[in-house]
Image 1: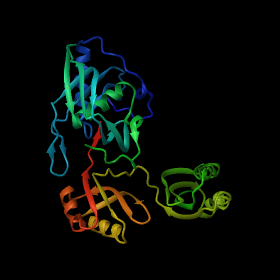
Image 2: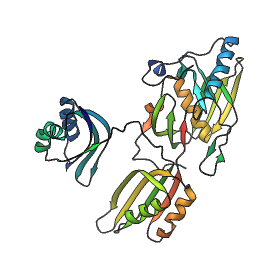
Image 3: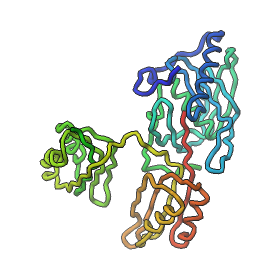
Image 4: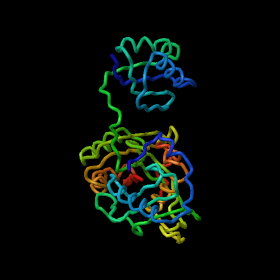
Length: 166
Length: 172
């Protein structure tokens, strides 16, 4: 596997829903997760970033810390999300994002602070989730990939709205 | 031989400055790097990295028709090619208060002493002419963290209000 980087056209396409939950899919998910963990940061990845146009993403903020004091980031562990659909958005917050598919660039993006979403697991069973804060931001970032959107599509000016956090 | 220059252009603000300057550079075979342009007071300012085939004299000549017509002052410095060297800021400092001489020097002096490396600074004078207020937004890399930065600014808290905030960057 290798990370595709913008302007690779695969990153800008709508991904197809996962319809077949078979061993091949589960093998891909296992390989995608292993690959994610080899990448700097490595807290999330979406299938189109490695050239598979299917609605698959993985997020894991376990072990991630904030600031110099290394405070843990609230999270619910490893999330394998197939066909994720965000159903509710609440609040908004400005934050800085980068992307493995957009090297050497970070910018400000507004995301919902709390989301409800559904996703299938690797066996096709649907689950409901709620997520907040940094994890919610990561999920929104990865789900965007499945719709052909990069954080570049959501950039806001670095000179305005910097202090709209709650 | 291609060379990189840091180009500074300043003049009275009017519509079309950016379009005309960049068109002249494009026509001369110039390549633009990173740029920061903004209106400061009633002036328009450009700081821009430009790569061009030729030397400073040739770059000046390429821009001369535009700088003369738009009455822009041009300053060029030869620089090292330096793209793809971003630092990711991890701290943001907002300072505001009644405008007075010395705010920037004192704030940035305290920050420098605490090991804070400024990557971006933006300041504006607001309020009215009777009671102007100075607003300073700074981003940078803090080697010592939010609390040390906060403590470094604390002695200034009698004359300015300030806020220090971590910038968390998500790499997804």
